[in-house]
Image (tube, rainbow, N blue to C red):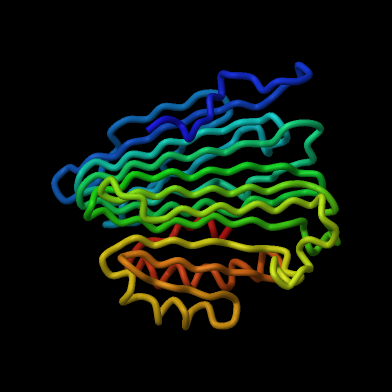
Length: 280
């Protein structure tokens, strides 16, 4: 699988402005009952660090954008591969800040490959969009028939505490998840602020300033549904069918989103060491 149709070495058309490009790849392999690093590649602004995980816990990798944020024309690509029987957690160092774009879109592409019996928790922190930001994210995953995936993508629309409002901008989120060669989840979201009061529309976010999508793929997905619904309360909704669970969450701001998101994720990763960086 390529880097989600993003080629960081291919500059975006338009004025020759300085842009951020980065690409990073990481793979894990099984060593008896333990999961160990197999390979690591990083280029440009995309870096990966491996902090010491708690005793007995699967490895945790932290993705870092050394540019400190993204704007139109910037591109990041990540690839994660788990060999057979592995388990790992991936997160980001901080919320990714998406700044006003003078042209083009910021692009983040992620490709995940999970071999037989593996389990990945893909838990990046939220993207924060500022007024005029334009972001296109894509998540592609190829899972073996018995692999499991917990994935979240979240966005915060302006910093509520700073009184920020988004009057223009764009967010595109695209998911394509395949299991055993079969497409099992396809989701496309497009929020275009060329339409006035977009987030206040009842059919969009009804005034909420933060939102997240959670996907769990596993044989026990349906069995976890009631626990997840209980954890969400009135902050979101969840459904489960054919070995997958999908939850949508909307909240007043980023802090409220995390308060709803963390308990739901904990129900889907029992016994796992949740990334400590989420609590910093």
